[in-house]
Image (cartoon, rainbow, N blue to C red; front, side):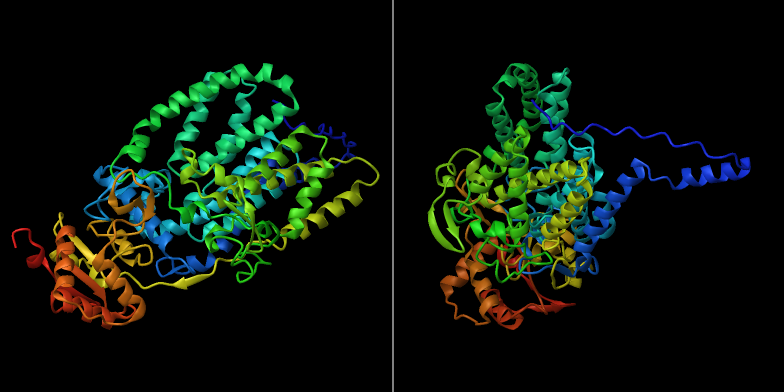
Length: 615
């Protein structure tokens, strides 16, 4: 496997000996120079500090009030992640089963391996979650995900790909704070926590020329295993990208195959056996355990990028326009392209400039391949459908049937970052008379490319606090361990406040419903959907919450609602006094189960006598 050949190091020229001076003065001067010398370690720390400051800048508006603020438009994913963080607390403190839970969507439960339970992030965050709550842990994960990913790419690129630290820093910055990463930073810490990916890619390249393939395969297996408990989809993308890149290299230089097949084969076999052994049971639960699903809904499978998305700045950037981007991506949290015109053109220019290098051609092929896949089943230009994309013929393959195609654009983003590193390295290694001019032009090009997509603080909106009835533990007088507390509205994809209530207690009570992926109608093995089996009372109260209209109910609806509450083993129904459309919701629930009682900041319906199995 050919690697990027860095320019030859320039040997330092010996400095002339200074004239004799007072020894004490010389010692002091040498001490000062040693104290303030710009060492590689200090340079690295400065780069890492810059990345951390940038991540704090991006999340600054949420840090003001982590529990009361959330990224605008969609609040469901943060509530879900906070629920998963609370689940990690129960895994550590109570020894609960990590891969499945009945603490929400009771009694069916949720297959956590088939969701993004972020166990590899949540378990290390248990002390923070216990001390400060899951809302703070969520913001810490977002901040560290951005900064950590940038730092990891800088580390790997500066040590193994380029020798110029500026080149690695530019690429690390872009890979950590690209428009795609900023878009997912709103809601998806599992997706932006990519700090293991550079090391996985590096280890894959190492095994192609390894003299110790067994050891290197084992190291790769450990990285793969941990990444599987952060986000499996990103791990799959990494494997696919490495495969396409290696194939592109071997097509150009087939003679390499004779040198790489043996160490590559041994290391991959060791990695497969070891990682497969470590992940065998979790994957069994994911694909064959309770509430497992196969594939996603058609709507998600068709989430693709518009071609124009690659030429527009992302919404959470300096030059971004949220309204202009509305039809170029599936939603605000899935802006997985959005390089901007200047960077897109510069990336093409880099490929043309360095086209003689096999690595650059392989990178270009990899980036282009996944950019095309990211367009989805229907290729469009400015929201006008053009033709059927190749994803139409791949979407039903095993594993790919659970992929969100627009996210393939994140692979292209990383490829662009590596191309930036190679280009900066080449420009700064020039030793011609025009070197200074070329560097000036290079800096200007970087500013033109990166300034329009510079990160901006995430936009936030307020969200209601967890009711005092919950935080003061008043609910404990009603709800037994085998019963549920039913938030009103019933938790669903669009109403996740009840999940935050449970997370605030570290899931000490069960709730029905919630926001998660599960098989349709609750039948294990069916295609996946958001949420559990359809709920009559849940849909009824959701409509009241959104419209404010109190429906007329008949005895049949009351009986069905009561049957559903019995199925949930409901102990109490809880409606916050400050809930939107609280009054029509209160009247509707009273029509179903009788009068409520005010406790602190909520209305409470004690339905234990109605839902008792012996009643």
